Image (cartoon, rainbow, N blue to C red; front, top):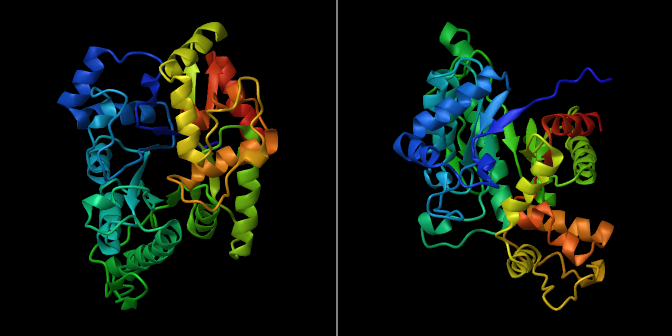
Amino acid sequence: MTDRQLHIGLCLTETWLQGREPEGDEIEEQRRDPAGFYIRLAQAAERAKLDFVFKPDVLVMRRGKSGTSPSFVGLDLTVLLSAIATATKRIGLVTTASTTFNPPYVVARQLQSLHWISNGRAAWNIVTSIDGAENFGDAPMPPPQERYRRAAEFTDLVRGLWRSYPHAALEGKAEPAALDHRGEFFSVKGPLNVPGHASGPPPLFQAGASKIGRDFAASVADATFASTPDMAAALELRSDLRARAKRHGRTDAPRVLPGLYFFLAETREEAAALHRRAHAHLTPAQRLDAVKTILGLDLSQLPPGARVTADLLPPDDRPVRSRTHADLLRRHIENNEPLLEDLLSRPEVVGSAHWVSVGTVEDVAADITDWFGA
């Protein structure tokens, strides 16, 4: 048995609504009092002694499967977590901020402010964004390589700004110091005008699982939110991140936090039926279109019962919307050459590429134990 600690966080996005129609009072509660809705979720997570709450964030309107989707309410996440901070005492608060559209000084200041408001419970999920450029000018979305170069400089700047006004300065043991940074993307003088907290700087999270995203995570992140639809993908990511972190001169590596959503019921049969209902609205044509969107792979002419083989894959250097999802699905095809029907049921195709566990509470608890041990 291992004595390592399992870390569990709650994603505040309402994934539990998959597989059933949301009740009217749930929709009305979230519309009427969105801050209160999320505060109550965070308080429940704290009572359950979870480690943190987290919510992804985007800077563009995304419509759900229906206009009544609770995720329609897109409160600014750092402002929302500040409200949650005042209504909780111990649980960690992981906010999301894009390095593509925000100024580093503003993000450094917001995060340090949340750190103070929460008494040292803030963390930053670093994202480079995959859409939203139209809301910040006429320039198109930069390519991934540029976004990650910008993210690296941005992250170094934020950490430098946090160091520029150390907590020791509040006790007269240090002085704030300017950065005078001039780089490829940013020029920032500094220092930050919010001092460091006694607990130290906020931890850094990252979620990209593409090759360039993994390398970025291995260089700076304390933990990575991982899209790992099966254990083989999780183990490969774990091994790869360790190797990359070592090449970056680190003696540790980012902790891997697989995204998990589960379908729970009193019996396995009821849980399986719930899982089927969650994706029953997706027609074969829609699933084929999802594969085409993710990989650029048109399987519409493939007959039922055929295998999707590696030689069918398009070149892996073509532009895709999400390199993380493309790499995951490509790797599954290369390693398994699945039947077409099985491929069209994969989490990457019908969901968000996260690990799915279906069964009773005991089944899912055993699943989590197996993954953690592995």
